Image (cartoon, one colour):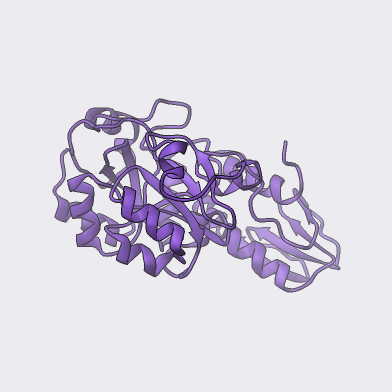
Length: 306
């Protein structure tokens, strides 16, 4: 069903998912400040990795409330926004973009889309919206409304028809965390970027900050041990469900709710690490549904990058 802009905005305000048409691909949109809403995005896509997501905003002024802009960011935004360029910058306001949307990083990926319907929705909503491509994992990104509905329509509260996407290729991603790096190729080429700012460094060390790139992401200082059913007394125990452990417990979800656990994952790791334990022990989490992504992230935190 083709929803109105007002219906899409109401769905975002309620923490529900929408189909967001952009000039690149149709996005699976959720409010960026709500970890429960963001968890629904990963769940809807299926077999997800907790990579950082791009936050879509209406204009540069809104982007500047979320991220720290330097002179390079200003130049690139002036040259290419609105348009298919994502800038990775230091996060300025973590209240506007939750840990799960940033994959626990100190950076945030931001874009101002050019599509008029996306612009209308973003201006009316007034906040950042994460919107990875609206396909199920392993499937082609949808560039037509009917394809978005077919792929993930069962998970969204409002599907907005913006016509066929004009570009059909995900946005270029450039990191401005230290040296400028070209993290993901797109319609805005490396030479396009270099015509605006000085040279781009090799992207290898910053690939983890880009959406769609496999990465270890945030890892705590304390060693992480996973699938622990009998935690030792000197650990902080990240529990999934009720526990009779007598030591320090940080809950992922006492109700054994995978969506809650996904939403809590990065903050729970930080909370456990802040207690300066000898180790962080994590209870087994089922592999089904969002559990696969949770376990993937936990394996990486434990050093199993593979």
